[in-house]
Image (cartoon, rainbow, N blue to C red; front, side, top):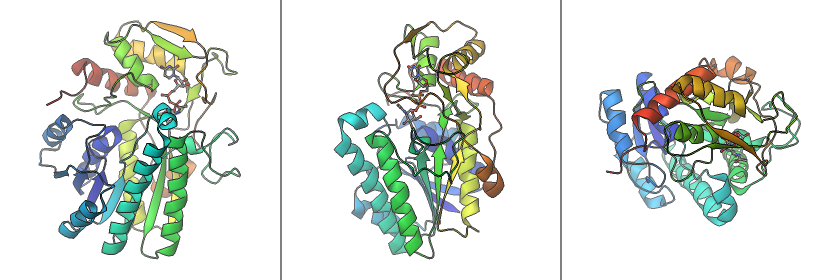
Length: 341
Ligand code: UD1
């Protein structure tokens, strides 16, 4: 298939571009580089051993999006492009809603006009709210909900895509609910490169390990969990990337217009377990301090992964130690992330 990968220069998008090429698909990347660096493209081309076409524009521009579909025959779209920082979404809700919804509307209109039949969408485990029952199932009794504008944009888009697919007999959509993606390509050449102070746990630990930050603040040590810190379902980004390839192939024979899939491992790992796994990977201590809880954090989050196993034929295979070894290889080879030029 010829696959348009929106946000293909980003963290999950870049790993998925390589997984698609490994599986024999071809890609065209669209990215506005608002949260990624141009240097990723050369690294992807070196790893793929081929040129990767990249179009640098903002997908909220409907004319440019349409023109791309006029010039390329697109069999499927994998839509990663979107803003994703929870705290920033609370401060700038309109920016988040506008960007995350308009990029999707623009793609959907172009897909409708050109009869593009398949869409894989980046959703998030954040659609499981405080009332959802563990382990989170795609068909749980509780409606999907979220507690911040970023998460609500994902909930809204799941509804939009479900409605649009229901009305378009030729369109099939996979809604992929990512748990906590971490790790990097085993080459250490591509990985997660957050701008500013990392919001997420593993990039923060990695920056402590490499000496960019003094110590980790562990948000809460008094949760009702085995060691008092929160449990999350961390998934290796390479497993996640392969999950996208499986979802794309599933869409060829899908019968439901839109279907949600959890992409996780099904296991919870605590913050302190992750700290210790990273210490083993890096061979050095990670200084940390237990501080107050972070507002909005759920104590425990992990997936029921049976639907993805049964219907996509996909399961995560990499361990937390693999995640930390690969995250450390990336961080130690690229202490400041990607170069600017
Ligand atoms: C967060 C977002 C979620 C988003 C996901 C993307 C919140 C409340 N949730 O999820 O909407 O989809 O990222 O991956 O922001 N932790 C520390 N110290 C740190 C950073 C994190 O102790 O410096 C802890 C957190 O309290 C949490 C765990 O590590 O228990 C994982 O945190 P994080 O990586 O931010 O992921 P989520 O909170 O699961």
